Length: 457
Image 1: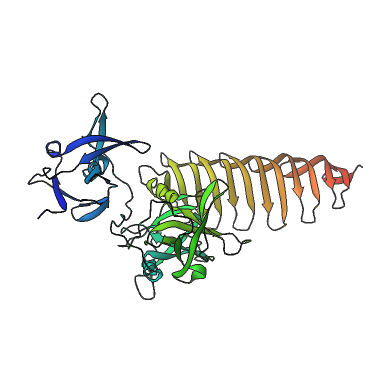
Image 2: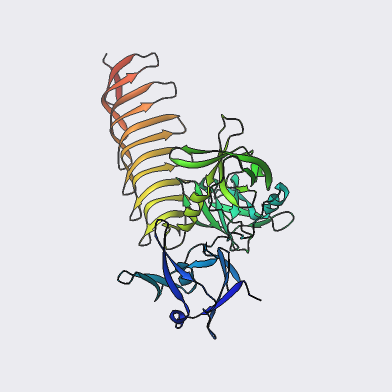
């Protein structure tokens, strides 16, 4: 009897004597080196056990299934050398003089976030069978500092370590998050939620909770137009609602790629899963085009996988800094806010924009708890440069120059009735001559004299 498995026991000292290496020249945008597995590749008394399932893209390491993206060719299973090296916490080196690759003795940081491997024996499922994957979908609740509910959304477990993929807008502006899983009959709530990474442009965020989770495999294959899909999410807070549809198109909106589906999607479904009939995630539900009837969007699987890969600690730029009165989530350099990020204060104020060496610098938006909003340039934590300030209590908008937080230079006031004043400002006060544009289209020239406006013409 011939076994369909090969056991390879490896340690760091004897690896060269037990691995037959070949460069097969597969090119997928990078040089692909592979390890040819044969029955002669055996060693005794060593520490790692790697089992290769012939005719499978997966391998097992100490009994745990790992996606290695093996190549199956002419009855031979080729395992990427990178997959083996990462299991040994080593790096792959390339010798250009001999055109060979090997495993370096130097340790490297393998902090890639694991995802569920593809099932080599996958079969088409019924809608009812796909719906059973609802255990891998969570409800996410977003709260402000005072515990007021800001909104709800959905998320997807991507592995068994508690990692959750969702939309950035589900967690945006939240001070506290709560994740509710399907572990218990009435749902189990987790309040200790870690934000691993986020990207406002992609509208993706990666969270983590402390639990052993049921992850879903994210397909690496582009779905086919017209193929059947199932959407699972929590619209309007209704936990794990299932809907059916098809892949009805592929869209490019504002430079971002989307999958269009006919599966009904409602508010609260954002961050939920779009699943093919093999039970694989092909997209993260993100939006509904209101003006169109039953036209819904999802972020494609390739974008999601790339975001997860870039969320490894060695790659991601996002970190969290906690202060006594605020929390910062964004890019950090030398322990200080540096680059793009957002700060949420306990009193309800929020800033989103750029920092330099711990201070707001560059373009940014500040939202005050009382409703005022400033959008514009910052220098050393002050509003300096061109900006727009909305006064919530009055409903007016100032657009113009600022210096160290003051209206300083030329600018214009826009009033609720449609009238506009344009002139020069000094220390927040209008000075000299200015133009007044009435709602009927007439223009008047006035002048400030001793603090009083005087009509000129």
